[in-house]
Length: 295
Image (cartoon, rainbow, N blue to C red; front, top):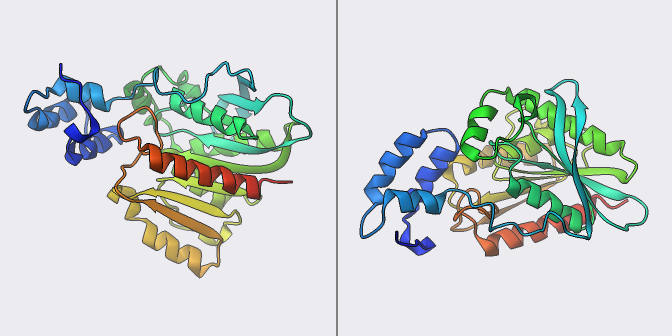
């Protein structure tokens, strides 16, 4: 089987994957449509292997990093799914208290990439909580296909309550300063935007390529940093109206569009990952939290 590189694969394949990853087409239709691009020694199997997540080889932080305290626990989400599993991470040997960050997964549960992101943020000097909104259904099942199917069974507003409950858990944690932000990706970007609407004392929000709220934007108090992928027509279509509402209500925000990168460009596990854009966006995110979560 030919080992593919990014330049071997047409943009249309990435667009198809986006449709597949967001439940617009099912696996069988995805494979059928990929067959159009299986030419010149490229097979459908090689395209599938190239596009699907590789979590084993792409983590940026060792889960057993000696500089981290990172472990799973459960907390209560009375208005959401009940008992929710989460990954709580913080640096070892810190003094005082830390700013908190809720890390919100995509539309497939708490997979290794999101756990990696939570640990990475903790190493930057924060206490982080990455919940698994699939907890009421048994938790992330170990693969994204099943994870997406499971997440579709949950009401997204109840899942929003699970992440608001995570905010409240951190707010009362002995190691947290009480200043808490949220960062989320895709579905998690929508959650981040909605937490800015719903949580009056949220200190900062960073939605990565997230859907936008349509109402109550006047209720946002948190400063926003919005991260967009230049090729992400689906999500970007909603940005002009959202920006107009933010301006109308005098909200504090900054937005960055990273040209020529796909939705999911921060996710290290798929070829949509763009290291230059991801590192720039992540550096901006950490600087933003450092500024707004300081005591």
